[in-house]
Amino acid sequence: MGIVINAGGAWVAGNSYIGYDSLFLRSAAVVSASNEDTGFPAENATNWLTYGGGWRTSVIGQNTLTTSFLTAVAASSYGLFKHNLGDIGGTVKLQHSDDGVVFVDVAGSEQTPANNKAIFFIFPEVSHPVWRLLFTGIGPGETLIVAQAFIGPALRVFGGPETGWTPPNLAFNDKFVNSRADGGDFLGRSLIRKGAKTGFNVSAVPANWVRQNWEPFLTVAQLQPFYYAWNSVGFPFEVAYCFTEDNVAKPTYQSAAHLNIRLDFIALIE
Image (tube, rainbow, N blue to C red; front, side):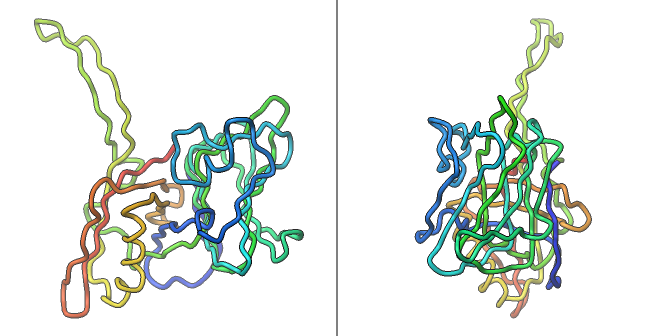
């Protein structure tokens, strides 16, 4: 199952989080991996694309993905999608550094998942110039695979999804092709998996919050995927790697000071 952890901090409103604006993709970032198998470089994981076979390393023991800056940058979450940590019994944790030499663990970030579903970890925001994901537990003959890795800020959505919301693990978007005999008898069917498709609405959101927080996210969401945890307290394992299919929904005024916001998206959990 996916993982989302709130490691502390005061709630402002709601317990839904969106992770976007990856530190790996910032223009000032210097990205590196400790090891790379031939043909599977770190760039396969640090961009948002997930079809190229991922970043792979067969080096036993520790492996890292690092993003470095000249000045401190803020982060409050990390995510992984299409990894094989569950298969190989591997562990991941997030670390930061002020000099690129001495690294400090982000409290509670170490995860040894039992399966390969999406991971989305949230923690109180801190700023440092160097961030890295440390992977351990790769044994002889094993290969670590990560198709998408994310470190960055987490936007706390003003409120949780309202009535009509379907969590990603229940929002089946599969296509079926049925086979029938001339007389109509059922001969079987083929399943074409297309992930989950869902969306949420939050009403009565202060207009200032929409302009300060939601508008920057929508600008990015038109171009890039994101991670979403819809209820990090009540359903902490229902997280997903997501992207929009069409134009993002426009916020609409509900009153002179409040707007409704909506987001529809494809949600992938493994």
